[in-house]
Image (cartoon, rainbow over all chains, first blue to last red; front, side):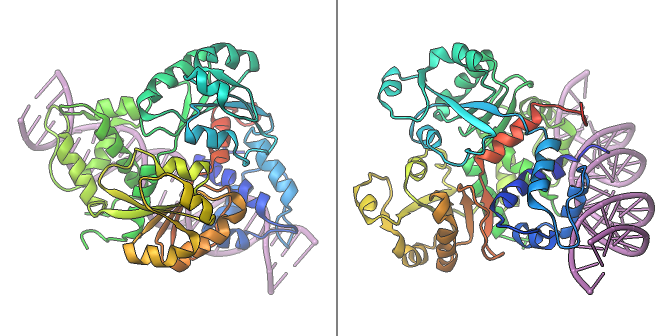
Length: 207
Length: 207
DNA sequence: CCATGTGAATGCGTTCACAGCC
DNA sequence: GGCTGTGAACGCATTCACATGG
């Protein structure tokens, strides 16, 4: 086993989603190609990094492939996460349905406004921001969705860092400056728009 | 000029954000390294794909570098976009502050509920979903933020496609199956969480 | 014949190391 | 001395092409 290349990991991660959506029956690398745009040999190669055998002459066995990816990527343990910042965006993610995968468990929401914490309806307990260290420690929360406004993002990230968080999904349009030990994934809507703009203009060099 | 490699484009895109945040004065590749984690020579190489000269012995000139990236990536034209689905997530993005870059212009919101369209407060006009073809055509909307619930995402994407949209940022946890001519960027929160989970567990092979 | 699976070849992005400039 | 800038070397992911199995 030669260590899975980083890009292959990302694809496998995304492949899990495809597998979840795919109905029944074996799935061939060709079908995956048509859904993702990745060449079928790329997919086969990626899968070949995993151990075990799925895949007969009719395609891949969905459950066992899913299981193999899960294990190989270290996703078999359940992780707790929280939402920080309960404005429109944060409360959207408090009530989001997409993580009932058993794999991630939303256990808390935080906001700097005590008032908002008391008023808001939520499927999970809400806490004022100053309780972050305590609550994060007590529950063993590892991940956070950072949904605060741009202006308070850096500060909130620092508090999360101090509270012992391990990873942050940052929705604020700000580059966070925090310890390298904490893994950050940025969701920059403006960047996504830009990226789209670049791609819908297939300008050669100086067309 | 050798065509900018795709990964370099993504970095340059992200670099624009750094430039916007960086205060005054020249910025060195070393400083960029400390903010992004990319090696300084990677950054210099990326920038070398652009034409023009920024960068003296004290670092890069922020305005001219920004301009060069903008032009080189074809971002100099302003693009119109809309928000589709005005639930919690959609209305969050209706009121989002991060795209006042002049570069993207939010011009409309759509929802299948006529009621919601009438009630909701919004900085831009809202329309019932059936008006998508007309409104998108009339304004020349090129991009869409797709914020509808999982169950209606595929259908909404098809409507957008039929209305002539060119690019979609998809927030629904679904792999859209639409024409290859339309560029899609997916924002899968669950994938982000998974990605974080993978990275905070630096499992060697079978540690 | 259909599919997966994989060593070996390819090619491209990254990295290096040094030249050029302020 | 600091920095940017860039051809050339490197290394790794992708791609190929064929072996293997149902």
